[in-house]
Length: 178
Image (cartoon, rainbow, N blue to C red; front, side):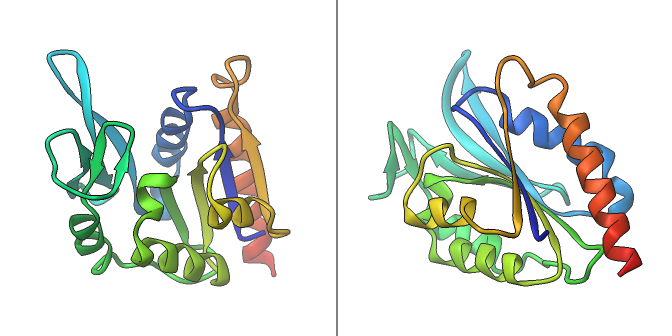
């Protein structure tokens, strides 16, 4: 198994789930990032990338100028790619990489797509959120035979992080024993 993916409708709690999972995996020294809403006066105006190393970058914003858009948000592809290029992606059976999210905004970047492809072809364990619906790249990832796909729903969003953590722990144990 090369990846554990978490999907669900927008706003259902995918990021909350993966952040909770990441908080329990600090001993594995995961690499990667999660997304966070940017709000001004209580209104969402964009999204930022928050690296597990603390680095931050505005990914998309209503005030950014870009030809790449998702809804009212303009995506800063050049800034995102500048963030991604120096990112150290560990390799090895016990390496854990956390990505939130493999979605439309992020997939505008060829650097991001290449990075995801390299991670999936490596020995590292990818734990990521992924769009419920997406372009052929996103759909192909979800159809791979070497992934486990969990779906967040209103009914399971409180218990899902623990279920996913149990799967991760079991996978990491198997990898060490191999």
